Image 1: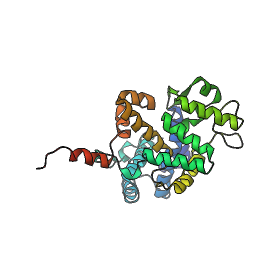
Image 2: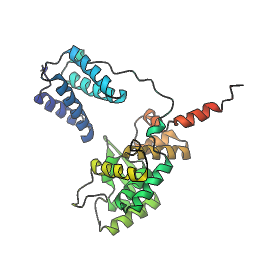
Image 3: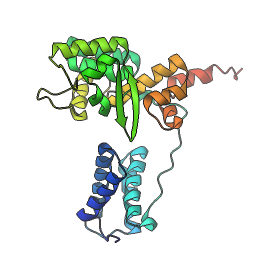
Length: 280
């Protein structure tokens, strides 16, 4: 049955469908936020094509292109689920840059500065978390798989997005993790937990990272967990020059996704074109 409005019942049905598709919890939460934003915009009005177009314009006027396209994709999926395909709208066209923005790129020097700052203020947990993400390339949601029993074996089995992959732990990191767990009396299970023994969530880590970047003098625009994963990707590629291997390590289904991670910076792109020698 096609809903006339974005009702609570319609949202519940849509969420159930996402669960049947085995979408991750974070993905489902993202869809829910996007559909509720659409619901608020409609303000109780019926779903109409002109209002969907107006919503697209509202998003375009208030958000970055990538965010707009992400939110449009969520609304389109919602509409398609209920057979309202004619109400779907096109995403914004994006002209891809041949290089990444250095304004939001965390470089190795800044990463080291974050580590030294975490160490100097005795935030040992953040000191270890930063190194764990940066030296393995894991997603922040995969920290929960770092358990004492597996760390001692030197590898972690990660299940994410309906896929399973093996994460090898660098020898130095293995030593750091074992010493950390011994110091805080963690004898089994997850290494990264709250004082109450629960898994750390991304908001805990995000908040600590934001505090850390201020003390370290690193732009807050650069300091977020996924940037550590991208730092790992760039360092790995610079060392091995093997994009297929990197895609496997990161758990990417498509090498095109991996290419985004290893794009050169604007500075590097400028340096390369300056070396072409085509100007007299």
